[in-house]
Amino acid sequence: MLQPIMLYEFPRAIVHFDGDAFFASVEQAMDPSLKGKPVVTGKERGIIACASYEAKALGVKRGIPLHEAVKMCRPLIVLPSDYETYSLYSKRMFDIARRFTPMVEEYSIDEGFADISGLRRVFHASYEDIARQLQSSIRAELDITVSVGLSLSKSLAKLASKFRKPRGFTAVAGNHIHLFLDRTPLEKVWGFGPNTVQLLTKQGLKTAYDFVMRPEKWADRLMGKVGRDLWNELRGNAVYPVVTEEKSTYATVSKCKTFTSPSRNREYVYARLLRNMESAFIKLRRHKLRARVMGIALRYQDFSEDAVEAALNRPTSSAQEAVPLVKTLFDSIFKDGAEYRAVMVVLGKLEPDREEQFELFEDRVRIDKMIGASKVIDEVNGMYGKHKLSLGSSLFLNRNRKTARDALPWRKIDLLKGESARQRLNLPRLAIKV
Image (cartoon, rainbow, N blue to C red; front, side, top):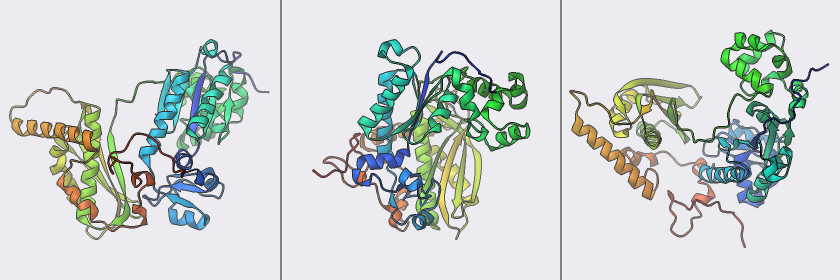
């Protein structure tokens, strides 16, 4: 006999909405001729980034190499990823959610949380009806579907949205939590990784219900604060708030780029590394941060990699200052003749970029020139497009051989008057002939 955990239905109401095969769904929304067909994105990477549910039904999943996926599904439609358009759809999806409540958290590009507690009087509707209206509005206005979960905490709401996909809706009231958790295996719980699941299994647990039926002190002793927080979240006692502010605190900033075709060309691999470094520092400056440490990684065609990191001479947000260190790190791990598929730059030990105390022997004139150059670069790129003004190494970016994976998304080819490869109207377009 299952023991109820809570008697109240909805002392608070948290919604989790999750895009169904988001990237592929956006492609199908832009081009209605793709609807009902097996569509995948990730052509530029050689690995599936997202698969439509029609493709999933044929065994095609995210992370599978494209050549294997094509063998599994002959009519597979493979598209290059169009992250710019995906971001536009994402922004509109969150804008729709904010019509229902200002308490919206953008958890990722395709999923978010919304706190609708206390809004029944405003909408003259139940919490279930409000959540369904949010779901149907996204479907009607964007022509994409989301699965929705409604419950008392973020952890429960996220579990509920995953319960029925795609286009699912699951509401878990407080007096039904015990029934829902009894049907939830440990590995489905948000926050339980493989090692945690193994640990809990060795304690005789099988479901999320088994976990919450243990005392809170037991969860705290076994897993610490994480265990205690999840224990409360799963029992409907919200611990994690819906965070409406844009993320502004970072432990690290990283940029990784997979080549459209593997390369042995030293100049090309180095140019890609510098381009990633420039992108990382652009993001750093956007959030008014600077880095003390930088690391790089070169990934081989077999997915193994070499990595190295070192401290910068001083905390900086200038890519120009970091170039000598990047060159030293690159030379230390690059192997002539090796075939590389990706490069990564990671900036760490971040701190606010504010006025600093001058050091006695620093080259202040050179530092001020670097800071000034960064400001000019940001201003020019803000006007004419990212990387319009960049390091000279970008001249080597065209030296890699072109393959079918170099195909651009149609939105970057079919330009409107006045648009360029770097600058387009921030408006989704439909591939419909009229």
